[in-house]
Image (cartoon, rainbow, N blue to C red):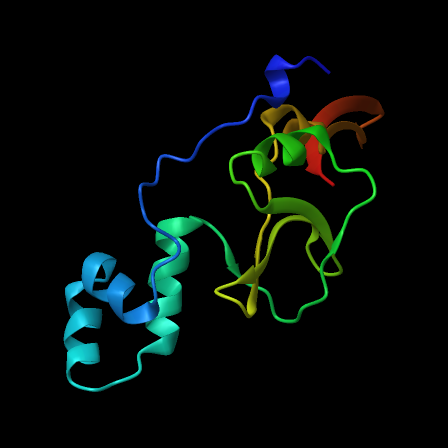
Length: 147
């Protein structure tokens, strides 16, 4: 593995992640969220959704705090985890390998399934022969079967 392949990538986001809820909401929140908050609503779920989308695009809150750091991550997951300072590759029982953020806003664990490269996706498709007989002659057909 070369040093270039694991080069740290800085995210394009200029959002300050140390802001409290109300400050963040009035600077970066959507107009609907700002209006609801100004009328006294807590808006916790919508705020969390918008903030995660702004700071960790593609991540979601994990169902339970069960993700542990994997022993040996795949190369593509490891590369993707380097886009952020506090993201590591973990194992999640129902999703397999995931990018993980611990203690987001002090109490949430975020996960994202890493994007798999095209060559891994294509490897899941295998050509299988199919033999058919018509009036004594045998036809060989190949078809693609997704595994």
